[in-house]
Amino acid sequence: MSEKVTLKSIAREVGLSPAMVSLVLNGRPVRVTEENRRRILEVARREHYIPNQIARSLVTQRSKTLGLIVPNIESRFFSSLARNLELRCRKRGYALFITNSDDNATNDSELVGLLANRGVDGLFVISSGGRDAQNLTANLSQLTIPFVMVDRTIDDLVCDKVYFNNKLGGYRATQYLLDHGHTRIACMVNTKSATGARRLAGYKQALAEKNIEPDSNLVLDTDYYIPDAYLAAQKLVRLNATAVFAGSDNIALGLLRYLYEHGLHVPQDYSVVGYDNSAADALFEPALTSIEQNVEELAEAALNLLFSKITDDTQNEDSRCTHKIVLEPQLIVKNSVCRIDG
Image (cartoon, rainbow, N blue to C red):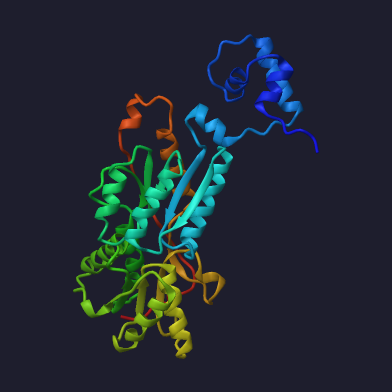
C-alpha cells in the first residue's frame, strides 16, 4: 500500500515546514516566494493530496459545514428544499447536515445546540411552527454563528429571514375559488402554526372582499400530515361546501384520499386548491390547482443571505444587519376547480 500523502510528506519533498505548506494549501497569508508556492501546489496536485478537513478547520477557523433543521423531512416541499440547499452548498464547497425536528419545538432547540456543537459555520432553521417557541428563540439569540430562518419564522425574533407571503397565498387560492362561483368554501389549515394562521388570514380577507361572512364551521383544523387531514376531512360532508382551500399539499392529499374512498370526486363534487404545488399530481387525477412556493428561489435566497454573513471580516457592517426577504407565491392553475352557477 502506498504511503498516505500528508502535509509532512509534501513538506519533506519541497524542503519547507509543514506549517508553511498548510498555510499555502489553505490559501492563508504567508511569506513565501512564488517559486516555493508553485512547488508546493505542484507536489500536492501530483500526489493527489486530499486535505484533512478537521485539521484544516483548525487553521481556517471554518469547518466548511452548514446545518439545516426541517420540521418534516417526509414533506415533499421540505425534502425538495433540503435537496436544493444541499446541492447549492456542495457547489460552494460546503457539506450540509440535515436534521428533522418532527414538528416539535423542543426538538428544534436541541438540534440548534447539536449542530452548533458540531462546529457548523452557519444554520438554516425552519421552525416547527408551533406557538411554544420560547426556548428556540432563546437558543438562537445566543448563537455565535450566523443563521437564517427559512419559510417558517418567529415574528418576535430579530434575525435574517426568508419566506413566502403566506397571507397572499391563502388570499389567491380563495379568490380563485370565489371567481369560479363558489361561496361555501371550506378551509383545511393548521391553525396552530404561524404559516397556517397567515394562510387562514388570506382566506378570510378574500371572503371579506366579496362581503361573505367567514363561517367558523368551515375552518377545519389539521396538522400538516396526511392521516390528520384524512380525519379532518370527515367533517366536510356535513358542511354543505362546494370547494376547499387546503393549506398544504399534504393536507390536500389527506382530503383527496378521503373523498375518493367515499365515492366523491374532484372537481365534480368538490373543487380543491392546494398549497405547495409539490405532490398531488404524482398520485391523483385530476392534477391539483395549487399555490406554488418556488423551492429553487427560496433555497437560493436563503443560501445567499447566509453566505453573506459567513465572512472573515467580522467588522463588516453588512454582517451586523438583519435582512428580511419576502417572496411572492404564485397560483398554478390545473384541473381541480370547476365553475358553478351562482
